[in-house]
Length: 107
Length: 113
Image (cartoon, rainbow over all chains, first blue to last red; front, side):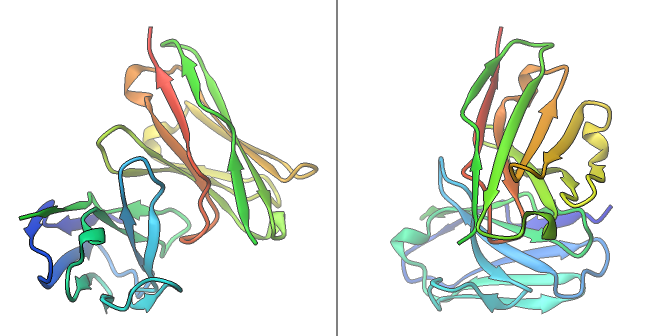
């Protein structure tokens, strides 16, 4: 099974900060990686698919990069609405695997 | 547009079973595999398994092997996820999803004596 290791688990940042979250796969997943944002009591919301493609309607301050085993989600200028938990997910195989999540908190 | 509508919240006793449904619309039901993902309170997302609505074949995460059964009814475009021998650790929100974008609204299953 493919394992996904996401870091950091918690991140404290201020509005306007540039934020980077990393996800590492235990084997190559090509670009079959998605990033989600989740707020309490809500279903995950897709931000990025295929490692770097921005889902329609998602602000351009979100971007994704990487391929193979190393991936990054960047928020270029953190906004108040961005304080949430973020998950990476591999969908290279019929089975899915998620990272452990990164909680972005207000500093 | 794609819609995945799940059944309502459930409260079950330890040792019981629960069956959650996911009714699909807005696309060809048999063209997309259906995944089930769960999230315990305050925890991360956990993939449970997948069903091919076309032939009914399934693949389950090892953790749930022997306790989970996924089925489908093509006449109603509905997929079911049944989890047996429930314990308190199974308290979670259960989601169905066909791809990274299209998820159900989630079903809270509470296991409590």
